[in-house]
Image (spheres, rainbow, N blue to C red):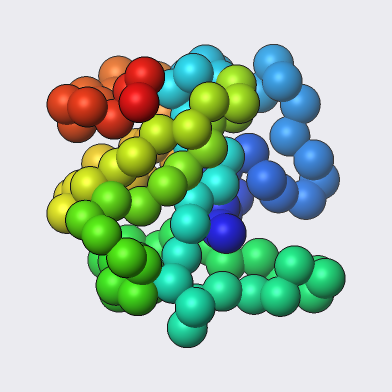
Length: 108
């Protein structure tokens, strides 16, 4: 699983809830990645999304979707074909941009 880097919610120092300006229902916390990009959960290392090169890290996942968790706790299924610029906005907790969620991603 990975995160959005310095503008994401999993960072050091820890992000406080009030720093999630875009709202917890509009910000990705973590996302599933393929085995080649995965990090053993006990290692103090995180996979960080960097567009466009990180898109290849979704390639090993089965199906057409990747699974991601929003900060408020819900899980969404995003198409692997989601444009990198849109994934950057989904991870960014403070850009103030509205997310145009792909059809069928919410409430599955």
